Length: 382
Image (tube, rainbow, N blue to C red; front, side, top):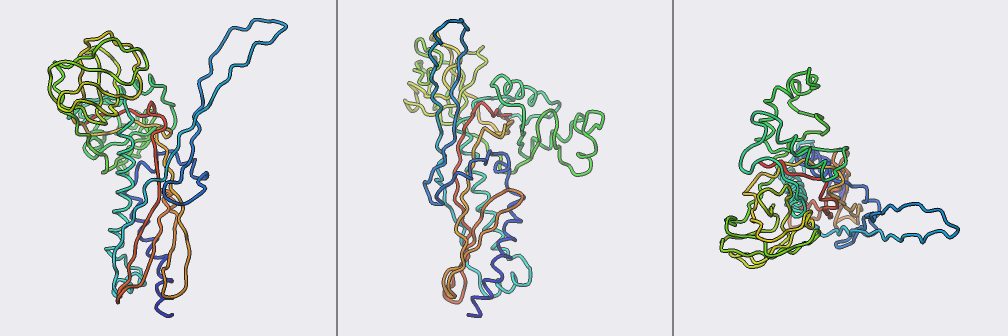
């Protein structure tokens, strides 16, 4: 009984220690729209949350008449966000580790387990974004902001053309891009609107209509190897088409998540969902559908490998995290505690069970996410 009580008393302390580590590791969970978490009806894997998507409404001329015109029916749709990820980060702690926690010392293994789970969640959200974003600014393989803000201004223009809402917008940069941006006089000079924030704490903050953030978890997209010069669009494809036939002699691959373009002068880029044909692709499925019809013979090209820096609006990505059970059961059985991080909102459960002369601790989390509005994000390639 006494041992169980000691473990129970320090359970909340260790949970709080782990959540403190999360604050330095999350970025997308701060950006994503989490307004739909209140609709979660079951905290179990594969439960769904439906996000409503309004239907387009057409205008028409008004013609007075004794008989009113028929009402045009619209059918709003919904996108299901599935809680498809349930992960844990388990570790064993001996009695020495328990005494350290009881004395307010963070056990190194507890901190590492919490960090591992937080990093996995962050990486999962990046992977989901990679399969929807189609806007592209900057130059593959070249870190932006070395001399000016043109990469951001181009991304902002593309976002505006894609009808991205103006607020709230965020820029998420890897460490290389942020280092360049911090070196720009435009961000250092108070007369530009920077104040003393950059000089005092090294954070860019809100500039030019977006809040600028740095994340060490910004991934690189490794693109396919399509040569491009010999691959062309086959035939006419109407606006809205998503499956595009290809022909030509160029060898190489087109991979999911690649950013593809049809025609050297076309302003439009698309995200590759999948391709058919292996080393000589015969067709490609894209998102969104074509913004402009193809006549045939347009040269196909893909953006080479790039760092996935972002300009993103909150509504681009929906993230839902289920609060897991918070109970303390009978002594000698499993003990559980849940804390909600006030900074990130992550619900992280810590489950404790006694084994052979040691205690197993396991952080776990249940969540799901989905790209809801792919138009609300643009890569700032690096």
